[in-house]
Length: 508
Image 1 (cartoon, rainbow, N blue to C red):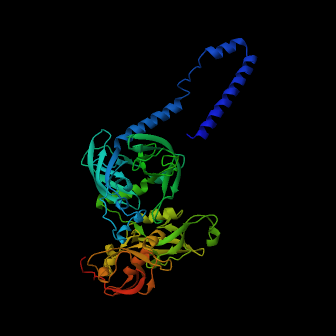
Image 2: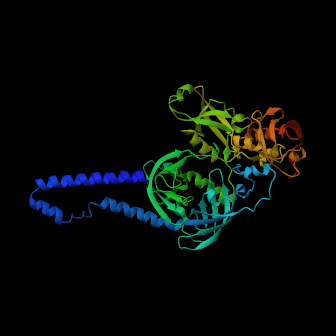
Image 3: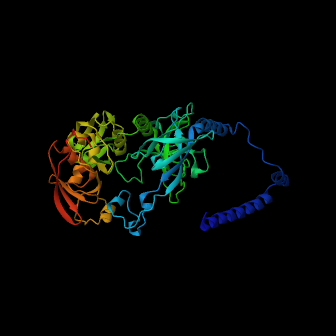
């Protein structure tokens, strides 16, 4: 507590004490002597059980929930490799964004990556030892140990992670474990009681805090990728470092969310904690348990929420839906005929409230699935048939995509958006517009064409590319067996490079 706050509290106490003294003097002058004696010498009568029945009933209910959930909560201790930036010895390389260090030569011998130790929380979702936690808890892990509620410690393996939703699934070799019941996060309401479980600061294992659902459908204020689904549950149940990956449960003891981050200037709980809703967790965990990876649906567009302020510009009578603000060329949205300014109101007959709801719904669709979008174009209703694509992060390897392979587009190059940080690190002039080459597969067509990390691709087949998604779309669209012409900026020089993609039946 700051000195200023202490002074304020102290002065308030002084004022309160002075007021109480004046009031006592006045009452002493007014009240008869026998009343003054009773007030001074007789203790207050405690409230009877009936008066506190509601409070004790609530306490007992919360105690029952805690007793049911706590055995399924685990503490997670992680040993992981330090980030590459922490191992770099050249001062000029400090602060480099992740993934860019391979663009630069080593001016000094690189130090071994240090090992780091972290802690988090998780929850058992099946009796045979599957555990859900956050991806950021186990990111880079070389060893994961799980401590159960009965104090047993076991080694765990990472079954799979999903960076897009920040979720991970672990597995321990055990049976007949207490597992949590799944709840339905879509039925949550603001003001509803929830409990958060975990190990705050890593030391206070199996803690429980109580609060309410403060809000729903919150976007992620720390998201570095606008395509990441939001839809977070906001709660005032205390969440602190170490709680990450722990369960958020409703009054029935059902899992409605996974605690994932807080908004705080101090780094500790400040009344605003956030959890991934179980609607997302259940789907992602199921895919990770089945195959170790997650396929997210992708449309290829940017969007804004419909608001009371912008609704009239789109001939809308209410503020619901998602406005298409941009469409990625050669994307599923583009091929289906979506246009900038279209308002998406329905997906497969279900109403779309806002962009976040659409993002979550599409993310849960399996790539290759056919969907029907109900849109308003200039106020006129239309329906569009669309085949859902597969989401890829900004740094994409064209040869990793099944669709790219089927189009003969295995060129073996990974690319990343030319953000201000990337541009600065590569010393790319402002007038150079394109995407940066992040990696080149040895022996690939890209390597044969002379591409190298740090190059900037400006055009594909005489058409400008300004994003990783646009580049991958152009690679996908290249006819099988046809060469590709790239315009490449490299170390201040610009040149055309011809690439001969691997044919679909080639390995590599």
